[in-house]
Length: 148
Image (cartoon, rainbow, N blue to C red; front, side, top):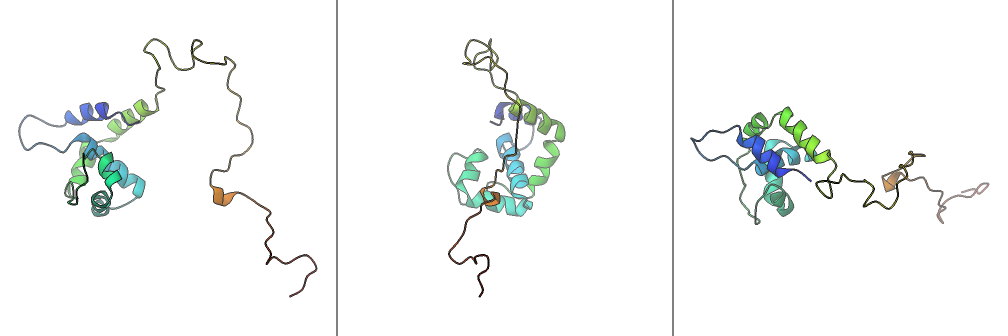
């Protein structure tokens, strides 16, 4: 869902023609997302990426590697180059509804089965299964009036 083309375009604007090539924008932005989601330090983030093939795929590596993809000190440069304006524009594009066709916005009359407006939210939804109230009696439970 992340618009990697937008990230690349905005990220590339930070660099000139000279100097060593920069790390790809997917690696930079992906590492910052991983750091924020896992709430880790820069060193721990690089260690997590090094150990986890799924995180390596997320940052754009084509195959698993056992060596760190970058030095933890580069996280500071990633944070400087990817500012809040870029993050806001990425969030906006990610949350923007996707169109089925360029001419037809989602939910328009031709493709949808129903034209009635969505109903209002009612009640309370408990998302975590560990929080669902349940009155289950176990064989070890005491019954009212039962002693020791």
